Length: 412
Image 1 (tube, rainbow, N blue to C red):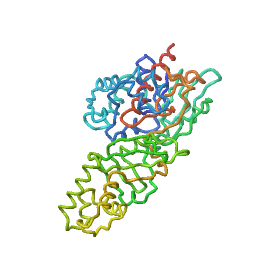
Image 2: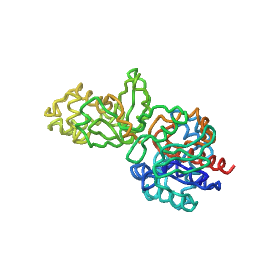
Image 3: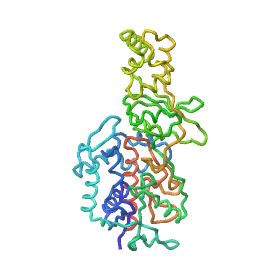
Image 4: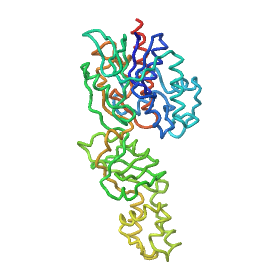
């Protein structure tokens, strides 16, 4: 019999198992996959954005809902301590733009290996099995029923993730376990997800990546809900890339709002400076076709789309371009409108929004208020953040809080 069983070998589950073991508890970690941390392998484009090098307050500002619930956990195990933890495990870290923290090697595998070695040193028993249900009487937790057997324990941490990237093992098992205990589970929805565009011209530019562009996400009421500069990618369905994934987390009310993106291809130039640039280009290439002038302004794959949006013939000589046409070109470069019909399916999201209702969980211990001895950690909870390492920080912090509390309860 183990004191604590942790269900799920992702970021939150590994941290919970380590924290419980540090309290002196015997721990069994159940993971359905042959390897731990499969989802960690794909975070940060395979580099693993471990956390964000900022204060707990800044982390909380990057959590759009239920941040108050996470205040205790993130304050007690903040980014600084996460960094210290991995550096103690022999993983040198570096901080990049936006305070994003990565392993110096740029290899997510180094983070996973560090967790695995730490678990082994702590004496955690790692078992490949898929948990099916929590067995309990009316007041007493008995253990975890798995496909391969029964695992008796005094406390259990559910860290099964959400439903994003189901091939990594995140298939919503924890939601069912929580519901069987009487918990409310808010329907999972995509957060940090590519977006589907209404306009067909996005598909014509499929594969084109744009760096150093700026976007504004607006509603039909002209309200700007997000604005940032960075990198985006055109796809066969619409838009993806870091800028779009972050923007998607702000677009949470498709039932009531219509969203569109205003894309600025030249954010470094204000309208006056851009107009001077256009005048110079047109004068220097006065005998060339307009389409060739445009090739000097945007990637070649974008030229036909820009000609279509401006309504200026590509074979028009540069010296024949009128002031009104030049103005249309400027306005298009500074503000292509892309209407969004919705997000891609939740299975394609990096992070799931929704999950176990946090008002039914103790924010200090992560223990269920409905089923004593059961704890929740990570993405299974209804808490998600913007990009930049904040979602992994939630996993580390809640995993730590749940594991420590579960260990203390089991030995108490």
